[in-house]
Amino acid sequence: MSKVSRSALIMHSVEQMYELVADVESYSEFLPWCQSARILSSEGNVIEASLSLAKGGLGYEFATRNRMNRNESIEMQLLKGPFSHLQGAWTFKALGDEGCKVSLDLEFELSNPILQATVGSVFGQAMNKMVEAFCQRADQLYGTGNR
Image 1: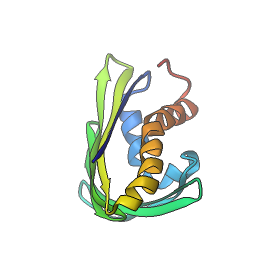
Image 2 (image 1 turned 30 degrees about the horizontal axis):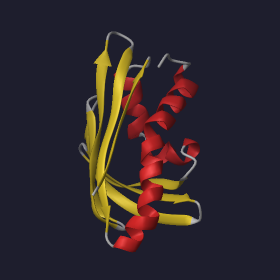
Image 3 (image 1 turned 90 degrees about the vertical axis):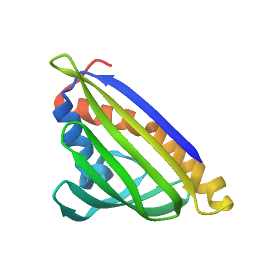
Image 4 (image 1 turned 135 degrees about the vertical axis):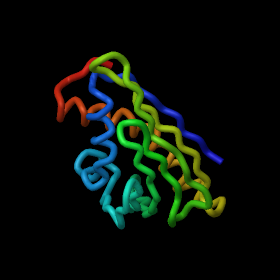
């Protein structure tokens, strides 16, 4: 099983960062390997979302169920896709009045060894860069923060 754990300290509020990560349908505007992102369903604090990713000629789509804990965390669990296992969470922790720590912890395994060798490395690379991509997007939307 592969694991990704990334975090960043950023001079934007927990509320701003939570809203940015929760806005799934905007992902394709700023994540270069995200071809499309859409909400499949929404009920209470649970949304189901589908992402289509492509990089280096490899593409795949997967869907997750996301429990939205406003301004605290977004917990993800696999619904469908090329994975045998995918789960993780975004967490948001306030640091003073204006800053926060944003973290992404994710573990995944693909359904067969060939996929793990190809798609797994691409997915791992993309997820490793995701926190930085969200921090850059926050700077674009809310003004430059210090990291």
